[in-house]
View 1 (cartoon, rainbow, N blue to C red):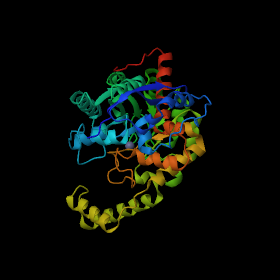
View 2 (view 1 turned 60 degrees about the vertical axis):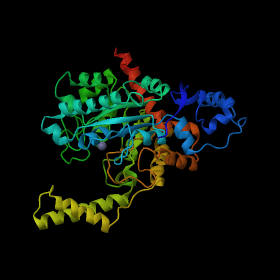
View 3 (view 1 turned 45 degrees about the vertical axis):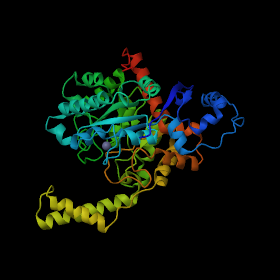
View 4 (view 1 turned 90 degrees about the vertical axis):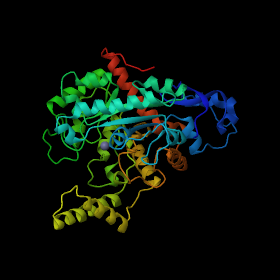
Length: 441
Ligand SMILES: [Zn+2]
């Protein structure tokens, strides 16, 4: 198992970006230490000063090197629910899934937001609050069982402190706001438990918001309760996540929220016409103008029209089979039929180039400060692009960004700087309303 055997320190830089800076002797020094004397120079440059880097004779960095030296925040990884369905010890190597500690280290991942995912049917059945507590308990036990590897992060400063201690931060995001609708105190309860963003709805419209997947737009956006919740989340310092909600709800969030918001795992509708779960160009512009950030989802269905067409056809064929055979949807024969369909008709996996196209387009629409990564690892099944199959593969994405001419400073923003900026802005607004941030370190 490869472990970062380095002692690092993080430096908060002038524009709110964290860069990992090697500060002490190392057992396994990255190639960049060949130019140790110029580290300070690089730091100064990242802070915004115009200082030529030509003095440093370093060769261009690779994706693998930058993955280890820059902060990587991925705002949506579905480990908690994966472990509920099928437990595995992700502090060691696992044979299944997209995330475990060794692979995260290999990929340079520092702060994966763990998705506390509440299926709509659990919410409708009244089990949302208990399931959220159960999934958070799972993450607390994971951190407690491997205190030399993981730690729950509940404020932006925790990321730095954890990194100083060679720990992977586990910040928590809640996917589906159902649990906080169950009582007045529920939002505070889950804030105290560490939830730092809430995706307002999931696959169905709920008591807070309409969902992009639900044709029943009961609220024409946000419910009256949902509108109030936005203000309460602002005041407490919980980021608002606009992924999954309807276009109207998104517009209303932007209108009401006093702090910038995130789309924790969404991609661009431009490349997937008709897939309203993704964001339109206008929405991306609006989000960027409000200092928010869209974190690109890696699932192929979120990336290409070919996958959208494929999935629609597969669904239709499977539904026709169910109807003709008179089977229940959960009949094992249905699953076998769908698997066979996939074998006969290979899935059109996206490539890294597709992910890069989405990033490029956000930059063109809203600027480099408006885009990040929200892979949806462990949440999109066997639909990940070639070359981005799990958390060990961020270096491939970085190589792609380098290939398209992105500077190190810009790559740092995409990998985590932008998400961190929004988190800090949300914390700062809450502080202005009298809520001090709660940290674990
Ligand atoms: Zn989702």
